[in-house]
Image (tube, rainbow, N blue to C red):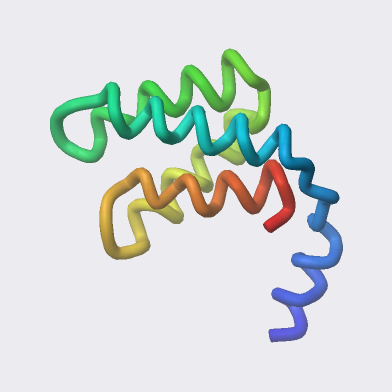
Length: 89
């Protein structure tokens, strides 16, 4: 529990409405434009999060997809983890 608190403090950033709005718009677009199984969205997310916006590096994206695969529900649950990494909460 202490380790989680230390990590949360060490990685916390000051979120801005602009970044949160951009994240929301990106994941709304990702969810509405990709069809098929949950894994179809992974390539779309990688292109947008790593290549275009540079919000995540390759390793962070891999960890985010792994967290999405471990948690119940669709892979797009990765949005929660990405929001934490990019905006701090």
